[in-house]
Image (cartoon, rainbow, N blue to C red; front, side, top):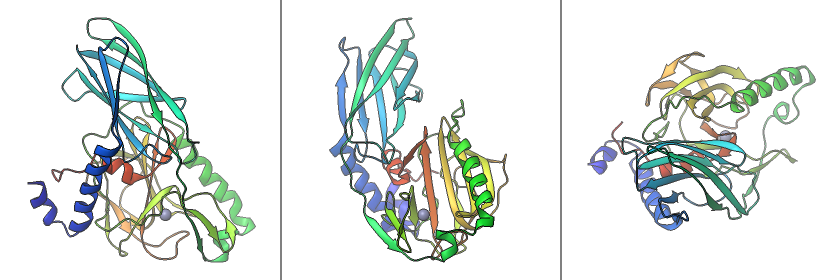
Length: 308
Ligand SMILES: [Zn+2]
């Protein structure tokens, strides 16, 4: 049934390819451990445990759990159960800039019978080398004119302030949709040299898409920014809750306003070439508890089943 749905989608080769990759990665990178008392079994799924990747943690208990408080990389990891109180899941983001080593996820588990369990699960993060690309853009985007610096700083501050917070409620549910049918370029984490000057790594993924292609919300969210920014052009930030944000840039225009709630698949704007770009495409960045992570790594652990 999944295949039927996917074949009606013009991006069929992309979706099937991603699905195949996800299965391989799940098999390849899954890990598990049991806590000392064997009452909890903890495992993870991820494309890889590397900088810029999302890992989906699963905690299984012999008896029902009331709540789990998680902590990793100094940030709260939110856990949820979908019906079965013996199985809980949480997303962990490994920031683009972390060093390769072992990072513990601390877990405080409260069972329904009142018993508290403390344990941890180690994520062994391996090294990843991101490529460098040299691109030529209009000079004003490399060295913006002095009169734009205040605007740029103000925009950076407001975006940073958004990503620094985590909404206490979870808005996202289920799986995540691709915002456009086009292929993604392997652009995440790439260090750019703009007109010969090194810049910070690319913290999003670019998708091939013609100007005017509708951009769909990958999951439920609240619009916390819909504005024209100097570098990102027409941009929309969706707060999916629990510290997970989607940031879409370079839109020709957006069709939502700050404060709006959007449903999965709802059109939030159209692909364009506004801001610092060389051609029309969709830029999608994800932040998870402040970590810069590749949207494709989230799609790999929570792939769209075609049901949405
Ligand atoms: Zn981009």
